[in-house]
Length: 212
Image (cartoon, rainbow, N blue to C red):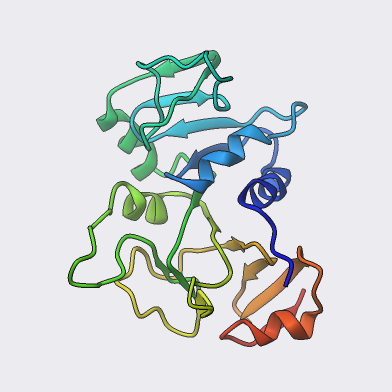
């Protein structure tokens, strides 16, 4: 089965972020979205460690050790950008001022429950970060994740078995196989990204899929 790379998934997601949106990119793969935002759109990126107007990753050799995103990775600041205290950053998040947040996930349920901070294993390292605030505070939650675990199990599930980050909060899921909308009727396939059929996609997904 042909899977998209994380860069290709990030590029596909960036296409759906509208002009004028205020967006938070979560730690890890979601930060790749900043590298693919269309140049003809003004998208204002917020980082929970206290940046508004964050830009793409810097070119090699141009990193500023004092300018990093929430995942401690080098980033850039666009013209008009600003730094501020993390308390002010979470005031933006909890105040409902973000249009979209992009998060990774271990599991997403058919009704949009999100599990992304722990697998619940005894030796798992808790990694809550700001995910719970973002899942509740953002107007839309986009998830970027692999469609399957390393063991080949679907990460889109009837019910999450890992500790929850948020309940019924996910709007859309971007995987290396498809773009899926979480609707009241169920999980709808907006677009198949890999070279597979709808039936093949259903075969590797643990919930019934609807045609968009």
